[in-house]
Length: 428
Image 1: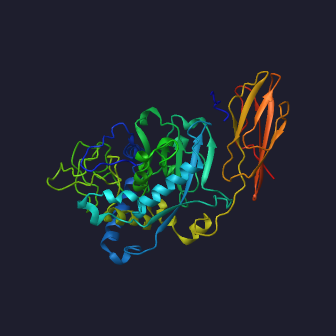
Image 2: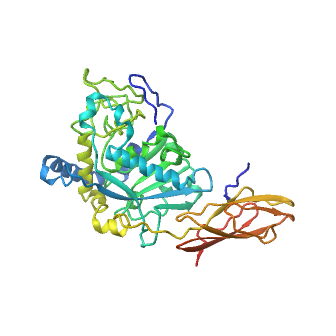
């Protein structure tokens, strides 16, 4: 069926090789090098962070959460940049992505049973928790999922990072349809702390098909965001700060991740740099696509980033910020729906039936009130009405969606090549 652009676990066998060459990779290194070329001053910020990290690692009393039970809570907002295509992923897919991230960063992922014996003792509960924001920057109710209509979803890069929320208060994750030609092989990329210029591009941007394990994504790809958050919290690839796995032995500056060339297949007991030393192929910061763990050393390094002022990561988990973003554990608010809908056709001919569907966001509607002047029927209270138009022409369509928090209304006209702005909501 034609759909108008306007209308609208991994499975691992121990001892075998799982090839992942068909999967896309990470463009963090390229983005960082480009940022460094344009803004050489970021090198001083990185050096400052490395000095802080060295002190943090050596001073056990300074490690706020070393051995503790309380997690660093990071408020998150997903910006779905879409043009009414498949990149407009469901809330359920976003919720699943948060679930996967939280499992991976708490060592709660079921596949820890597959960790190679060499690394069982250092696989870490990183004591980091991600919560979708319940308040936006203005204090308004949100479910932490922001939907923005834009053609920039195609061929995206930093220019597609629309409607950023303050990076000091939220981890911004943008979801797009495709990357620009220069990054066509990328699944996602992130900025290391203090390297984003301007700062409103700080965060992570990912293809819609690498978010969570359901919907448009799959379990194999579900760890990509865990990898990118690692970069966001100052972890390099396990083989070092390059995007060339398999080329040369390297190190990531973490004491308990063995030197490696990097892996693009899942050779669990792989050892290429210092045989017989087994390399940490199953690390989330690898390219093996069979990641199941972070190490204790990586945990300390990420905690250092969260305690440093570089990149403002230290402001994310403060009690003041958790309260301001609605991520302090208080009762979740019910939000007014942002009304939107799609139709399977927008060129209406005599006798045509048009199928409409509510695609409201930010809050789940419990009732719908449609108006179809010139259609049969002319009104409906269904979430997915079917309307017949017996005369060719241009027709207005209006939907008001409601829940216990309130009502919002959205209208547009059905005819080829037109859709009114997503911002034309009227709230009642």
